[in-house]
Length: 365
Image (cartoon, rainbow, N blue to C red; front, side):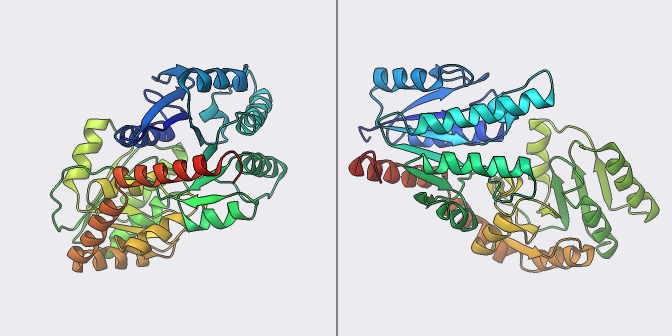
């Protein structure tokens, strides 16, 4: 085990946050290679907790000195929900969120040890004032860090334009024991929202009468959910089953094991974000059909773990599923390569190498 000590600042379970869960996976893998101290906020279960609204820099410095940390690694998402900055009104919440982001940026440049920030949710566009502010905050965090970690090359290109030092380290995946089987069964699992393209997925089943589709997840829009039910009823799609409610962890596991292919028919998502649902499908060894959008399409094409299609097209989705079924073994091999190359053990190794490089270079990169 390496002697360096890394402090990881993030949310951690039992906080209900995707970033909290994936950061814990990273920490678990890193602990096999070096010493890791978790510094959390909110309801995180960790070695130390800090208040992001209080004396953040001073509190983190005390932890660094007490634990003799060599590197601090921030898991960064700018949203108020992640940072826990709720107020009595949306306006107050927004102001608190902006101030907390500024505190994080200032902290990164004030600690005296190398700092790393993983930017999970990127907001490079500035179509309105709020987006412009978020982009500015993201840039502040990036340039105040000695190194930034992103998960796709599309993201890397954006951060490099800020003048920051960037490493592309792909998002890790867990490996769940499951024996996949070729079949004509398709699963959509996750929040059911108007940007997920579920209506096109359901319509695709008109062209796949010999296939079966399960849509499971909690709707974010009741009218959208009713519209999906109408599509099924009006087209008499007996091969479509809708389960529009929250899915427990036990039921999620059962569904992933029951179905053969996974659907990612999104119509709109940030070009710079890789869907967490893709990682879950890979973890369960499920080839995918995904719309060719940003980081999600980039990863599917890179590992050949499924088929990418144009968004807003039921016909293309149907064609994609038939292609995956015909060449199931080929795409399963891509899934297996994805799991092998991006195991959390290997991803932790890439992180450790970056930490060591920064320590050798000192405070400035």
